[in-house]
Length: 634
Image (cartoon, rainbow, N blue to C red; front, top):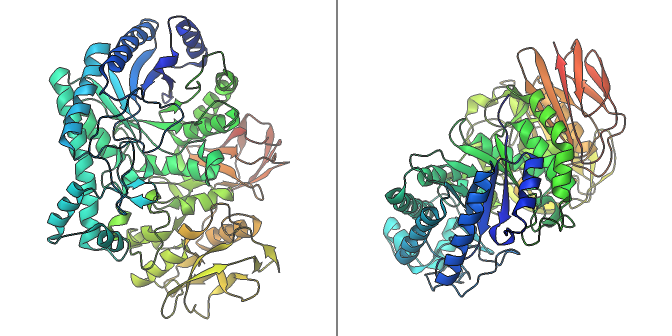
């Protein structure tokens, strides 16, 4: 069975001689194999640095002597630009050159990687941490990024502007660059991507070079954010490899349980983000862990149920481990140990879920995602509203809102979905049977010569859809229905699946072209639609998606209808199918009946009871925020 490793972060300052034993007891109870001791102080106040190093050295030695691998998590390098709840610097930072956005605003508490003093000082500091504490792994937090900070893009400091001007062969100002970035693809955007990416690569290379002078076997890892794969010009995996040198790269991906509580993101969306980013990292390319973060902690902010659901889904998705934030950052181990208690209670279930999925290949609707979407994006057609999340998970999130299993990268595909600017990159031979599209993808594929049913010129119109009419219902209320729609004449043979009540504008249609390709098209730009909008979730949308899959000749490996946010994973083995249901909704799923792609002969159940009746499963109720798994055999 594939190894699944639990790592936990703890603020080093909370670990003392008096409570180290309690931390150790809890870690052993939870099956933790690695602890990362976090410090957020900078390197410019010697008394603080010396005190941190002395404490880290003692704590690392204690945990290592007791069978727990111990490393350091450096919580601040380039700077977060905001004060995190656990990061209170003990001194005023040294005045390095800050990161500056395209509006000319200086981003406080940041350091530009083109500042040579900063580059030297931070690299020397990381080497000192390893040399004087004995740490074998140093993890850098996800402030190792440039592009997306505050409401504008970075970095447009004088050095970055000069570099981009040189690349473009003309003098560039911030205002001009800001306009040029979000037009059609051009040399200005290419220069921005290159200058941003190369400055991060150079910083990572200097960190590695300096560490190698001491010990080339010390690992430096990285926590990434989604923007790494496009806006920052250097992917999280690429930076992880540079930092690693000749050691095994370490990469923590992005998509955390707290997103579903403290931001406008749904639980299916964050799970899709993790799985999508994992698909962009080839097997065996690094030690890759998921982001089991419940910031800001403790448990009255983010329920343990969210973290446990996340953990189970990541196991089933093929992750080799999780950075699981089970300890509060600022308080003693006695203050709120309930994350650990919930973890221990669920651990046998999670191990059983992982065993059901082990060694199998994902099965479902293939969601196309790739790197480099920003390079070719045309922002006169598509929106830049979520450009920091490119490649987006809009298609996967919409499918999983409706309990439709998804696949990223390699896998068994019953249908294909591609939304937004990714349609410029998708190989056309992947669309032999057709696809599920949003309006932007439909317009792009039409430009590429694929007949998706659009006729004539394409326009963008902002609409507020309050209700839709479908083939089965005359008036389905729409919550948060405002967004941008791609409008164009539609082929007469297209079948209108949903239209706006009132003006009758088409919201969804299905079209089969002369080559036999079937396209189910949602006419909105998915980047402009609220993530909780009824345009991307609900029973009417679920039926349109389900029928669209059938229209390309596909049949879902498993589907539980009319269960909101029932995140569904399927994986095919040599003689069996693994099915996982992760209920991300506050309602229990009552008396679920699961449609299967064909008849099976037997089944086993994990976390639930049930019976197999040929090509369907009848299960016991699936409680809110609980996980179950089933394996059906040929």
